[in-house]
Amino acid sequence: MDEMRYFGETEDYAALLRDVWGMLDHIDDLDTPELACINAKLYEQILPVNYLSSYVNPRVVVTSFGPETGRLLGAVAAELRAAVPALYERNEDELNIRLKLLSDVRASYDEKGGFDSEDIRSILYSYYCDNRLEASRRKLRSQLIPGCAPICPDLASESLNRRADDIIRMMYTCGEYVTDSEVAMVRKLCAMPDDRLVEMTETFTDGFIKGFEVTGRDLSIKDTVELRFNIGFLPMMIIASRIFKKNGLRCSMMRGGYSIFTGRSVDKNGFFGANPNPQFDLDHKNDLSLILDEELNTRRLDTLREAFEELKDAAKVMAGPACVDIFGEPEFTPETKPEAADYDEQGRKLVTDYTARAGAIVNEYIPGDERSFTIIAYPMPSIGADFEEIFDATVRINTLDYVLYRDIQQRIIDVLDTAEYVQVRGRGENRTDLRVHLTDLTDPAHQTKFENCVADVNIPVGEVFTSPVLMGTEGLLHVTRVFLEGIEYHDLEIRVRDGMISG
Image (cartoon, rainbow, N blue to C red; front, side):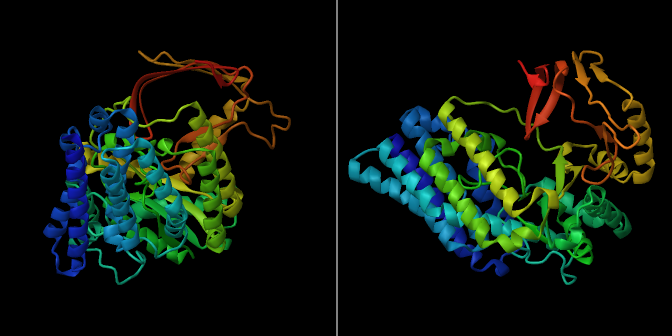
């Protein structure tokens, strides 16, 4: 019977969560292989091979229970997986609210003698409303306040050992999925000569600091920088934290989105481990659509503002994020499933409204004209046999001479400043044919049409860019292959007329 199979799967997982909670009461007695075994077990069911038959998969649960009930039950099963961080953060309330969510659905089933979609929706709605404020507080605390992250209270501590085995153990105690690629990344960084690893890290930290210098913003009024990275780069982040500390900045770390409260995405934003199954994140990224209405949208904004108001002093001194991006993860071909939850037209309007108003709240408490960022990218060992060669080449590119390329790019800008428009045409099979209209300069001696972007906020060096004049900007942009938010697209075409997408 499908109902009993659903409860068998979800209640077995709930039992696993309780068992792991008890095991982690004695985490100091567990060796690294035991921690690795626990880590694998917690994520085993959503690995691609098991996901095909799991009730957390919208296709399976909708086939069994129909679109309305199935999507709701799938969202409950997905939210149960969001209890994993609570185990390692030793947050019993976070664990219990998810166990209660499942038990409430079971109680409803037992009372009514079957699944009632409106009852399940009401249970999920109440779950979200009852816990939204605390979820906002917790997310903001980790983002804004150093020492709140579950990895390590203080990565800048000089007493923190940088031995590979110790850092690998640390990875297994933060509640993120760990694969051989993260382990190999730690061993690679720890095996590097200290001066080379420091140089690599200083490029990253200096880029953040230069971002304030080139924009004329005052870094001295800031206290905190948020680190965003794959946990395989912990050795680099330890050094970065110590460098930032010498420059008067403490480091905070916010976990990447993992629940209906924080949002799910293939492209993680925060600190994160390996993704056990990007399709799971894609399938459940719109689970909020199952309960979202205007009242809930208002509550979301109210709780965001309330959380910011409680942490306004910490928000004021947030300097911005310093991000280590990665590439070379295992290939992923996304599937857009009609069975997955998604927004209708009204839901999309609510999401757009929330995004705009939430952005204004963030800007109110962390003023955009007072913060900056930096981003750098490195390959993961999962890129394949050429990892060492690709990694070394990436380090060389990321550490190119700032001044040399600043001057080279300025010569390019000097020529482009004399142009009325730029014609961009594709090469080979690329069909791009785009005319970009440029603004007029009223004082060419003191004005420019282009930004000279070197190794500060965007690393490596080598970018000049502009904001085009919309009228007269038109044509076709064709990209044969591109990754957007962690998803690969082929033969993407965008037609532009007067600066607006027309098709």
